[in-house]
Amino acid sequence: MDIIELTRELGAAIQADPAYEAFHNARKVNKQDDALNELMSKIQLIHMSYQHEAMKEDSNEEKLAAYDKEFTEVYHQVMANPNMIAFENAKNGLDALMKKITGILTLCAQGEDPKTCEYQEQGCSGNCSSCSSNCGE
Image (cartoon, rainbow, N blue to C red; front, side, top):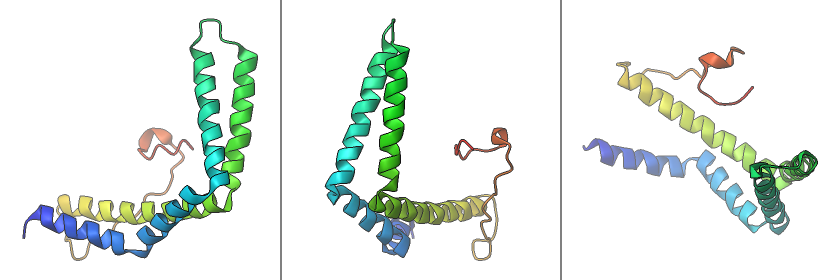
């Protein structure tokens, strides 16, 4: 069987997994949440206003600070929304599944036995220079 065809089968299996279903459903609920979408639009406007002000030669530091404060306040409102919380949890579940799949594929490409290799997620060492996760912590 062709490797691309097998990849398509894997893609279909991923879409049938409960982690994908939870993510897909949470994303759908978010799109229907008018209050959340209003907050998301507000964040975009604040961000654009901040960028516009920051690009000026004589940018106003007080305005920038006010935009930053407003952005943080709205961001916290977004992240406190129950639908966004459910979405983030579902996204984390799907991300974990995808990391495991990618990890196993990488091990196989390195010569490990596809039937027995197990991906072990790396914990944070606290040294960001040795990491490619871009978590920023």
